[in-house]
Each structure stands twice: as C-alpha cells, then as structure tokens.
Length: 179
Image (cartoon, rainbow, N blue to C red; front, top):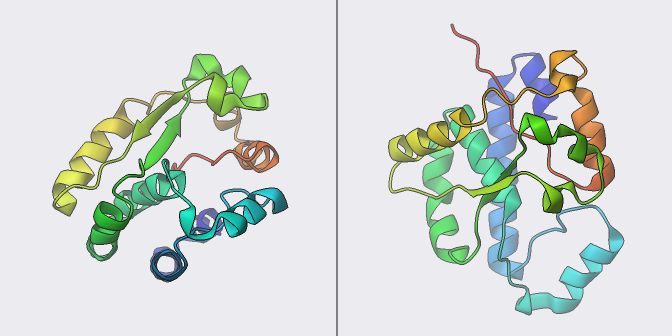
C-alpha cells in the first residue's frame, strides 16, 4: 500500500496510514502484550497466542523498518509519539533492519537468505528526531550503491514477490523528490 500511494505522490495518506497503524499496534501490545505474527503463517500466529503474556521479543524487525519509514517521510511527530513506547516497552528488543550487498544478491533467491547473507543493523531510538535522522542517514548511505539486478532492469516488484514468498521484509527504499 505504501509503495502504491508513494507512486501516486499521496504522502499525506501514507502518513495517516502510518499513524493509524502505529497507534493500533502500540495499543495492542500494551493491552495484550503481543504483536501480530511477523509472517502470515497460521503456526506462528498460534505460537504467539499460546504463549500469551510470556512472549518475549528479542528482535523487532517491523519497528526497525518502520523507523526507516519515519525518517524517509520526515515524520518527526510520529517519532515523538512512539519514542517512549520503543525505549521503555520494547527496550529489550532490537529494532533491526536487514541489508544485503550486491555481491550477495543470488542468495536473496534462496530460502533462509536472512540467515545466510546480509547484515542486520540495529536502529536506535535517539533522544530527538534530528539525531535519529542523522544516524539513520549514515547507516543507509553505507548501502546506497547496492543496486540489484531487478532494480537496474526496472522490475522492482520482483523483490516484493520474493520477500512475500520466503517471508522476508522488503527493503525500505523511497527516494524523495526534490520540490
């Protein structure tokens, strides 16, 4: 949905969806002490339901990628709204993102690629949005030149298909247009 709205330059609608989704997930966690299953598998959803309040989140990839979106859309207001939740309620969970180098692209098409290749980077929640943005920008710059064949040959949707098939999280890669 985000990429479709971005394609049509509906940035305000993206921000509205981000805000609503964030508030729903934060409330769900605070009252139920669990997140929805990272993938859509029935087994994973049942595992979270069965464990109930004992669910511990060591890694929160969703929040890592969401923080990248917050930075890309320069959404400091939302950062301020979720900062305490991420620093207090999810203090023990690493907010991670996964980057893959161009020379590892062939492993992307294999099951368990996230275990075989790439680098997991933790996105830290900083005291203010400016410091947070600068650190995220530094991390992202390290991977800017990692252009995969499907990017180069304008078949970017292949990434979404592969990620959906294997249960990976697609990269957050929006280029903001200069106004």
